[in-house]
Image 1 (tube, rainbow, N blue to C red):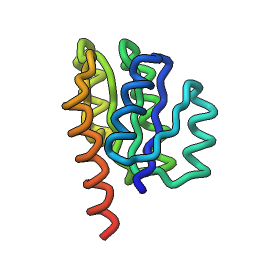
Image 2 (tube, rainbow, N blue to C red):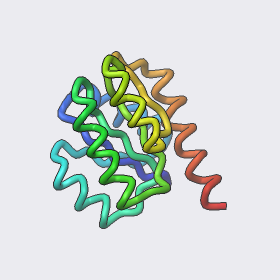
Image 3 (cartoon, helix red, strand yellow):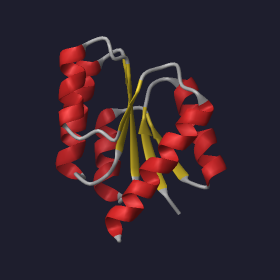
Length: 125
């Protein structure tokens, strides 16, 4: 079973990701605190990471750098506004799998999460 972890303080995003994961038969772990997220990431070998940064792209870049140090091969889906072009380009340089600007669309989110999982599976072959 595919294991996904999402870090978000947005209950709508958390519920939507969890609902899409249920449709895909993925197991989703919901987190709303970054230090707890990092501890969970160290304990569990997740297949996909979702970071909901929304309007705080600078913080997102720092979070993504920490995640990449801990688990460099896990595809990361970032939910963030793309208004800060310089920071967004640095996020892409960190190797993000997909940058998803809100609002979230259920069908597209399902495609993105499924693609990220397939990408991770192909890495392990």
